[in-house]
Image (cartoon, rainbow, N blue to C red; front, side, top):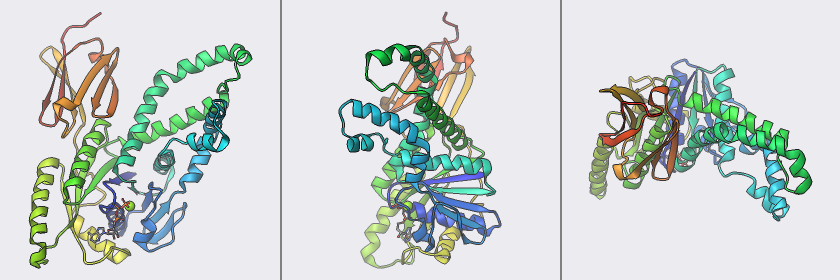
Length: 391
Ligand SMILES: Nc1ncnc2c1ncn2[C@@H]1O[C@H](COP(=O)(O)OP(=O)(O)OP(=O)(O)O)[C@@H](O)[C@H]1O
Ligand SMILES: [Mg+2]
């Protein structure tokens, strides 16, 4: 199954572009499902149709669904949440406050992403199009599996062992609600699910991310940051969609300044995302609602290009021998050298760009070698490891 994710700043046209893409793929004869992970759904508006949590047919070969985030949350989180509530109650919070605090913000959307995995494994569709929440949200969501994986790999087995040994004693001396086996089981299930999602979303032959932008300064700045972070976490961006370009037929002098500005911003976009291909669509004279309007956007965006294709391939992380040592290179477009912070501990390499951190478990050849230098070379962070082994 092919999966294409659309993301970008609020209001840039993600839902519209995702819907137009899905419609065009379906029209070429492939069975397509479009789903929204944004709790503020607007797919139904784009298709001018009633949508629910089960796929419903909106055009030939095309199904759409809007997941009920609350239901997903209850299905997946109940056992863990009950424990969290018990802990918060113990700490003196009343029930309503505890219930509110026991839900990690964004968790509901994360469970929507878990649906991507189940569609990937079980569903009869050829292509899955995902309309994501605005940039910040999606980013946090997408990086969460990485963080949880680290936690689960390092802490969880240990904590579970310690708790198993301590429980009979500890329960007698404190009223602190220790997590029971069902909590651990629920966490383990949750983790397995997320790990599956992460694998599917970072598999370059399966999943591509498309960044939607408008030719506006703030939108571009945010998209560039998103691009860096997506690369940091191993997600492949295969194209950038520039939506709402002023059409050439607009000749009113009132828009001259706007046109000039857009031309400048377009040049910025081109130089910033090259070699990732750009797809373009113009500002229309009305809102884009219904299949006909969406189809015209799809035509403009893709022309002869297969909208379900992998439009660009590049490896975000490479390890190559150099002299007698090795160079690990990470694609971090737009990261400035001052922003990048590196540290190693045992088999792990920590890369920090601004507030984001990634843990990379180093492959055998790099373990126990020291980092001798780190340089930014174009958009790649090149980390050199020394040649000899250190005991
Ligand atoms: N090229 C365009 N020309 C005219 N109108 C457009 C164009 N692209 C999007 N729109 C309109 O702009 C509005 C916002 O678009 P859309 O809902 O796709 O944005 P979004 O990025 O999904 O927003 P949100 O962040 O709220 O989910 C919609 O009314 C849509 O019809
Ligand atoms: Mg939207």
